[in-house]
Length: 82
Image 1: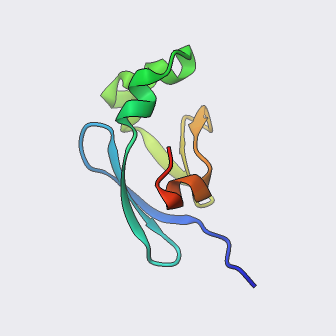
Image 2: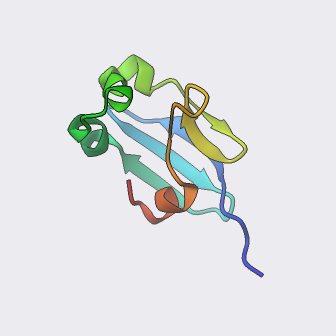
């Protein structure tokens, strides 16, 4: 039986980098810079503002911003794919 992967801790590093710890102990530092800066979608472009980007939270093991205004599939984050 496979375990459902979730994020147990997220910490802002700098720029667009966030350190994640998953419930199986795996650790990743992910850089969202390319995703945020290359997006043409206005709802994503607003996160170019570092103050907004830094305002993420963990909700039920998911990394999200502003009540799921921006979120990524946990498994993609686990694999380092943004």
